[in-house]
Image 1: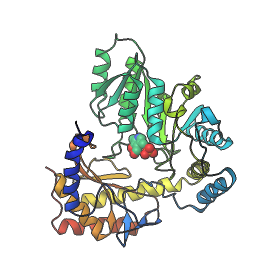
Image 2 (image 1 turned 45 degrees about the vertical axis):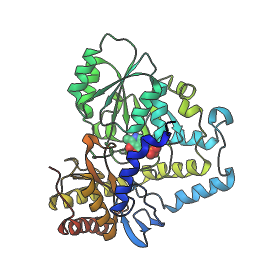
Image 3 (image 1 turned 90 degrees about the horizontal axis):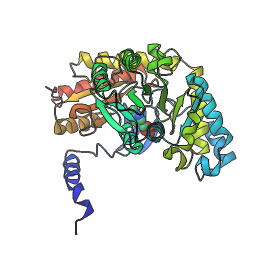
Image 4 (image 1 turned 180 degrees about the vertical axis):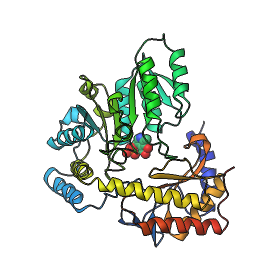
Length: 401
Ligand SMILES: Cc1ncc(COP(=O)(O)O)c(C=O)c1O
């Protein structure tokens, strides 16, 4: 008999190796969360620089109060999908609020951001269609393609001319064509060159979806994401986003203007066959969306903080994941062992960052990924830079070649 766990033995060995180097970098426990930027980890107060809590909104009194009130009024859970159990009025209210924020006619909420990609991609594309996706796409996008049954064509990361070539090659295949890019890429923090993709769209004609998971709330005059920043919202057919980052909750959404958009509710298995978001989550998210609209200064503070960390790391001579400033600042390390060693040294020094290792990284890079929050003070940012500097001075950092 083949033990089904045989295929996981390699992972187990790798995991053991990681533990032998220190703390569990991929399974850390926060003993207590003190604020959007502080936690007690292993008995120590630690600066959090790997939370995706871009707006620093997780402890806002009005968001918490809205969640508590919903919990008291509507209970702990919805106990079913919206198709089976019906919607709560607040599900619809949040969708209306988001559609207004995004300036789109329609918006559908999903239970997580991951499911938003699954639901949108598998709802939009079927076996007769083709999805063209950036090679560095998030796993939820890849999984959405698989679920859709559509033909999958990958183009080189951020390379519109490669997409152009691949579209030309498959011109006569028939079926719908959906191109998927991300606003800010989650690992390296680089943006899609949206204007280049829109030029290819004008040449070939396809429908374009932008996953703004890391750019919603962050980029653009209105905080709607990369398309807002680039002034190209009319050229983007569908937007996907998540509540787990700028909104500080959990859930996701898809939005668009197509007159049949709402039919996705009846075509999207990740919408139909899972329980709808809980009342507390919806109420918290609704309060947070309103806060994003009312407090653009959070976005401005985030941009200033991001530039401060980026420039501080540059001054330390660290190899960074990309040349543009964004709230994701990734430090490129040469190999797995030195990345884990440096991550442990940072944690001991009092700063938490994400470790990102192959195969989940672009180009199999080993990364120490920081994410900046509007809630970081300048002192926090300077402390993160200082602690990185100390760890580099201790000889833990080797520049990736
Ligand atoms: C680009 C992208 N899309 C979708 C998701 C999924 O979002 P969630 O974690 O809220 O399910 C993520 C999560 O990190 C992401 O980076």
